[in-house]
Length: 130
Image (cartoon, rainbow, N blue to C red):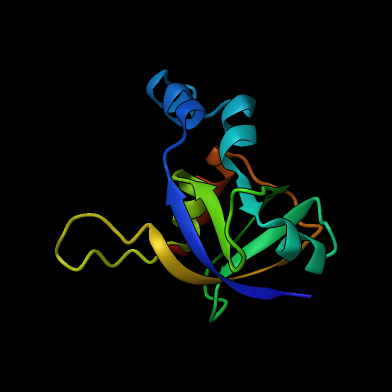
């Protein structure tokens, strides 16, 4: 089962604390940021997965992250901390603002058994595509 939802991304307190503290390559950063928070009803539809693949609707870019049920998320939307995992699927177009659209992009989410990569592994993956 898969769902097309709106992706919202933004800073969290712990993401900011870890990033500003120079801990972007730690397991703690990965556990804080390699996460997709999902509305409980949508989480149930997906089969309550441990991990999801978040992808652009056309499938051109995707990333595996931990799935987290979160009652504060509206149905049809997901939240990912603003970090390299979300950046994989956020459209890089800035419309001359210097900042991509971190809110409201359509993405496809589906359960996956894929490994959640570290920030270093994600960076290497992106560099290979370049």
